[in-house]
Length: 209
Image (cartoon, rainbow, N blue to C red):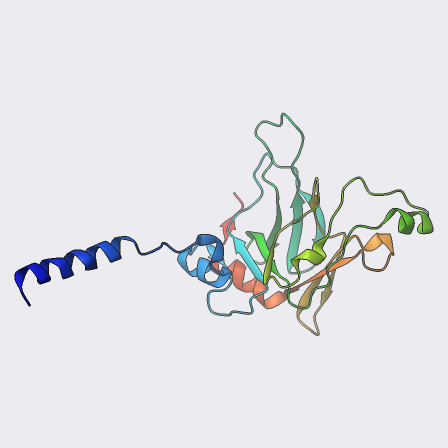
């Protein structure tokens, strides 16, 4: 190879390398993101993990609302709070393991085995004698996704489960949303593995000081 051809080959290689497209972070699946960010629990060694969580506890200035408790877990919800709150609330779905007083904040929940609901129509509300809700939701559009950001979001609010049931036989927590409407197609149900919650608490925790 002549010197001119050699220089051209090297220059072409450098030029091509400098134009290699960067990976789009929006297309990185949760399991990959979890490996790159070790502060996240979930997806580290099990692609079917039902929960991705971070090591966070409610802030001392938050106003957590208890929504579930058993002998093993305590779950509280922190909403947006009020305009002008100083400091502002730190919204989230927080789970405490009672054994070691560890806290995690659930960031994503798997949609495996989920039931996805939508807001009721005016006709459906009239049929059951209820007013049309002030916010709207359509979680059916999430079908096909692996995970959903948590807590759920309506058109103007955070949505926390209004009912949580523990099934020890199947090793899961059943999270129900908008279950009180009693209208077909409105309720949303998500499933969280008890074993996955324990793994998250073991992998990432923050002791409540």
